[in-house]
Length: 95
Image (tube, rainbow, N blue to C red; front, side, top):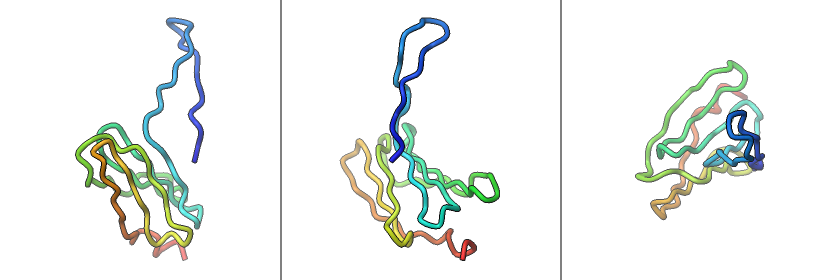
């Protein structure tokens, strides 16, 4: 997990925490998954430097995303109180 780091607003001078959600790296190191307030999950190809997929399955903001140790599955949680288990299929070209 990547910790949320407070930052200082240039307009108000107050420290704020503006990160919602979670990111996790695929075990291969080639992919990053992010959860979001808009209830979507995004998968990023770090080798190519672009977004590969936007996934939908939750009805409320997603709060956590984590790959399995082998990277063949990942789980997500949301404010909708669901835990979803997903099968990955985007890591085939990383081998």
